[in-house]
Amino acid sequence: MCFSLYVPVRKDSEEGETMKKVRVQDAVGMVLCHDMTEIVPGKFKGRAFKKGHVVKEEDIEKLLDIGKRYLYVWDLEKGYVHEDDAAQRMVKAAAGANSSYGEPKEGKIELRASCRGVLRINIDLLYELNGLKDVCFSTIHSGKTVEEGKVLAGTRVIPLVTEEDMLLQFEKLCEEKGPLIEVLPFRHTKIGIVTTGSEIADGRIEDKFGPVLKRKAEELDGEIIGQVFPGDEKEEITNAILDFIGQGADMVQVSGGMSVDPDDVTPSAIRDCGGEAVTYGSPVLPGAMFMLSYVKGIPVVGLPGCVMYSKRTVFDLAVPRLLAGEKLTREDFIKMAHGGFCMQCDPCTYPDCGFGR
Image (cartoon, rainbow, N blue to C red; front, side, top):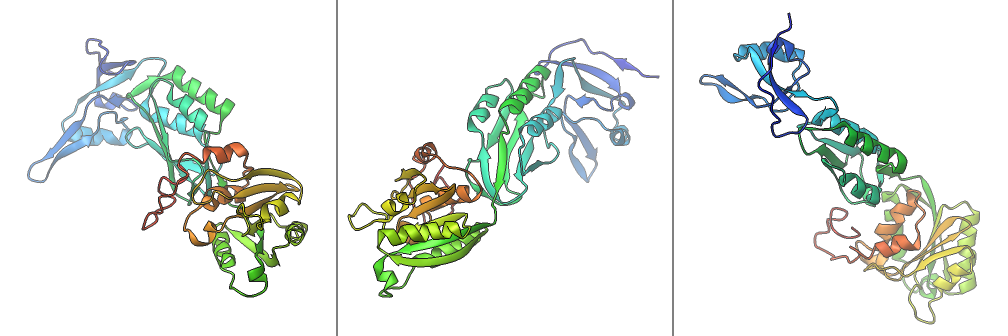
């Protein structure tokens, strides 16, 4: 026979909850409204069950062992949802491609990267969701290179229970404007390197740019399909870029000759390839003289000298996103201004720092 005794009804600290007293055997699926302590003389004294715990069938024997014949539990009113169930619904609605999540722990669920790539967060949607009553959804910064298993975000509701209507609104926003969070995986990308400078083409000095770009390509799953040294002749630089595109390159990286000096012709050589010049110049230091153009849909980047000798530059903010398949715009570069000043810390902790954030 099922027996339950209602305590005088009152709204405790949480709206949508009524506290009641029930037999332990009838409490399966109900939510404890206070911590429960277990005492084993001379061995243990501590919390056996936490407030908010959902009673399971396997808990009954232990509850009886610690002297609990009756429990005080929350009786959720119609239209309210427990924090664990709410967190599961929110993270499911928010998770996009290449993100994963587990079970709630103390009402919170974490979202992790399921592959290596670039994190993309719909920031406007993130703000809108956090404007809903009871929602807590926090993330790391968008645009970061993340490894598989990296924690990307955490979510929960503030009270122990929340309104069903809020969750429906949360899910609708994610469906209409989402995904909130996704990871763009690095693709196997073929890269051509055009290294300018007559002093390098003539063998007067050693090329220092190529080894840096090859190392960075390996870090981003890229493959260098060739490197050429056309000197400082604008037409030769243009032809070298177009030749790599003709060979099937997914990106062409042009190093050197990017300043405003009259004899630095790389920007005009890139423009002579045709296509869409997105930007010449970026609000990032180091890396102000960066250039991006799309030639026949292929990104062509002009790289300033700082990429060769500075540990982290505009290269690290822009190129990984391009290799993950993003098509960057002028507005994307403008937004890099906030956090675009590298402090050049020693030791460098990038990407776990404020650069580009």
